[in-house]
Image (tube, rainbow, N blue to C red):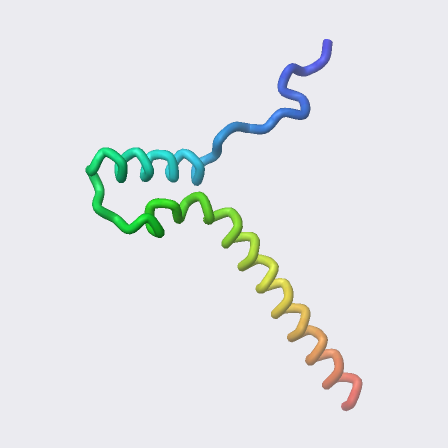
Amino acid sequence: MAKQNEGKSGGIGVLGLLGVAFVVLKLTGVIDWSWWWVTLPFWGGLVLGLVIIFLVYIVSVVIEVLESSRRRS
């Protein structure tokens, strides 16, 4: 018997749920935040991915500089 959840997504996720909650709170007037802050959780995954890519790039540049200075010595 095949698994039912095979190939399906795990759901909305924490950041998505938080984003929906912030939008509902903003629309009902409970919070008076800027829309930038309200929609920030929706951008969280993208920002996290970009930060990881940037850190990997920085580490690779540092490793390359260290290897080139070692070759010169």
